Length: 287
Image 1 (cartoon, rainbow, N blue to C red):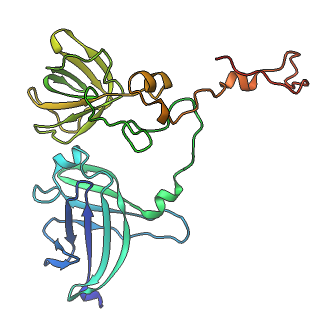
Image 2: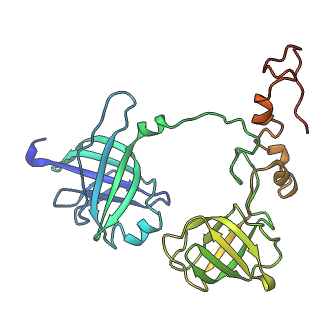
Image 3: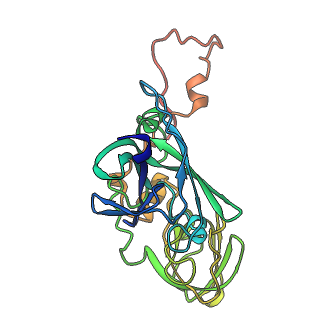
């Protein structure tokens, strides 16, 4: 491969399975079942890679295009965490290529009709803390493999329609039969309209007369929904043992340690005020 035949290609795979290919060559390239097109105007800085566990660093820049990467999809978060692979190759012979980067998109920003996306290499995840946290509340996420609750079970989800929306506050209709705050800490999924497919975490949930509902979301949706759009709400969990037992009948799968002593008990001095219990015995925390 010479300088005059050198080219780069990128393949981006979204979480929903959509795969797009781009190249800085002036003609389309095809390999690994992907067509890499040049007209999207996508370019990338040189990949900075280091030995050991240092984080690979680069970014891609491109024009927002309805046929490739649309602004509405970036606002909706559909490109967040997408997998990206980058090759260097000889455009005369795409089989003579070298994979130089594999990772995922980090922060994506847009301005003036263009987008800029940070690239994060595979080693970036090795710098994230891992381990078990011993705490009173449950460490599982409602509905995941550790929790085991089926959120499609009757009563744990319900459909409704948007009556009005103002920022992160959504008013709903047609949602009777659920207690006040039933969906608090849960999810609201937009199942139709411009925001279809987006999911938001529920901060507050208040039942109103006549099947009406008022929901506050933690963040405003990236794409604004409209009155009449359908949504689906999923029950929330505050991860306490009482909620796990009473609301979901799932205490056997509770992933917390509700009988851990609190910090005040752990640092409390002994009866003599010395901080050193000479008796060799410790009191159990009150239950």
